[in-house]
Image (cartoon, helix red, strand yellow):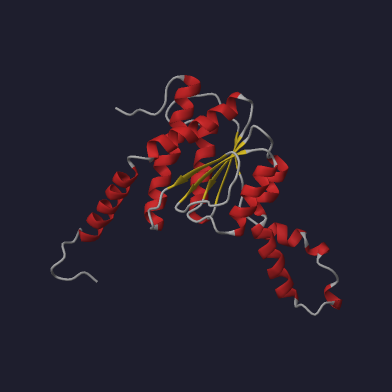
Length: 222
């Protein structure tokens, strides 16, 4: 509840100030990181590779958005570029694996517990499974996630590496494992809403770099 001393727009002003500060903190390093990551996308497309995106939780929207921009463009007609956003739905996978779970009548595990275990394994493998199906050398995996400690992220990165793909991780944390062909954009905002705001800027920056490199014009900046 607002106190009598606080102006009505105090909360909105605080949010805006936090966003501005996050942009200022990233101003020295983020433009070069976006350019380098965008050049990876361009090199992949010129080598007839594809851009495969995925994201966890709210960041999944950014993965979908980047793929949509590459496929459909933004504010002007353009040729469609090969981009695919991986899905994070796992319930079907859990049901689909019921036949491999053994005979429930001779198991000490309840059906609910067995389904929960299958669902957890399907969730952990959801991106890796799709990467094994669709990923090839010359493709780039663009992964959006505020943290990089989850099993989904770890398996996705390892599987993409096994497939010979380049990898771009856009996160609030640092990926500390040594991985060949990995480009990291670590934002370090410390807050989920600031991370989401920065993702929109990064997606537009990546798209702009691809557009300017391949077609000679990008997003309007003036």
